[in-house]
Length: 324
Ligand SMILES: [Ca+2]
Image (cartoon, rainbow, N blue to C red):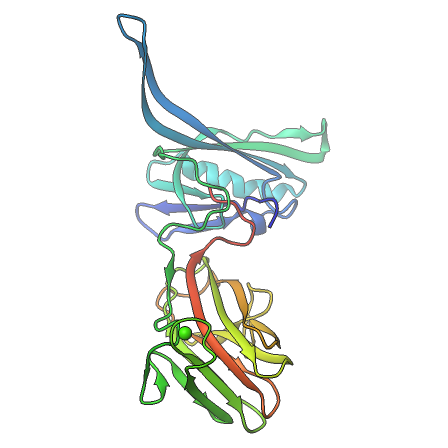
């Protein structure tokens, strides 16, 4: 991955009433949100000279600030910025800014009101505006641009498929409608075991599934598993993440949820390969929704495949979006 980008979202939290999220990329008609985001980390330190003129410095961390530059051709869009500014000026609203698509929200105050300037000197072309925001609380270090978030967790149990009980991998459900799923202690990628899946009849479904909990709609997660086949085969597997409450699956664009989708399908070779998908939990879903991860074989009758070292990491950084 080379380069990075910002994805600005603003959340307004009233002291009484529902919070509202403004996704500046989708909210504004032109330019996909702010044309430029310029973060700055203001050094917070006291410095003084002692009697013998030695410099003493006490660090208090740094205060993140950001200037967001907008060019607006659709004048109605200015109303959204006006709403945000109005809430920034009200004492009964806590306004929070994220530049990493909702991963890190920080409470902010207004540092520059976006007054409209004629776009390239011509009012008929549109308006350019600059909104300045400053964080209420200092931070103690500059976030690494593309580091994964703190508190990231592996959501699957028995992810190494090493614990088996009565022929079934602990914490997983086997799907054997048209084949078998058994423990294998010769082809494992790591640990002592892997799952050996074999298709013995046409149609669905052979594979494994496990329920997971993804409680923050709008955040991203990554699902993955190492797979190989006894004989290489094309279009041999499918990974499905289903929101059981909404009866919707993540589709291959990693952001759209619809019925009966595989988030990832592909070929299997005779060496273990990681098959993974980074996907967004739909912001309209509820925190209490139930999800299930399905690891399925899709190949032809006779296909034998081995699965090991699955994972579902949550939350993860949105693709190429930088932390702030
Ligand atoms: Ca294993």
